[in-house]
Length: 148
Image: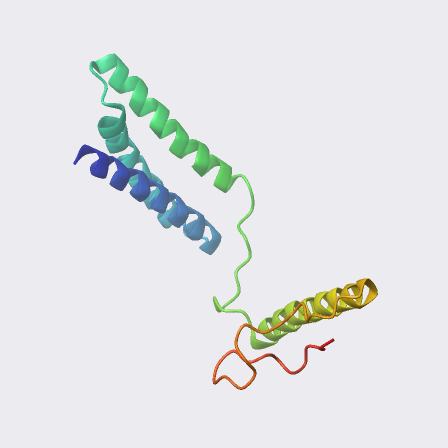
């Protein structure tokens, strides 16, 4: 039970640190403060459950170490300007299409290069052979990839 509680507080503290970054990027000072406070709260509980100090002095040291980690992350986050955000969280269709075309072009170029190397070395097998047959209902070989 103690291990589960410790894991919960570690995950919750890290989650609030991620929310801190999001709130900072959105320009929400209230969100940054709330995220920091919640992360500190979970860090204190984590010091209690994970470090299990036997006396008050060690408990104070454990809490200070955990809270220092939270404030170091907060300071590191706010040291740099917020990342610019667009109005929508999803990329535009033209951006997505350009990324897909770029990835497909790189794949196509690498397949052609492999075919050229195979031809130069006298290998007759297709290096980009499809897993399923071309007449299968799913996953047939793409027609635009050149065959040997």
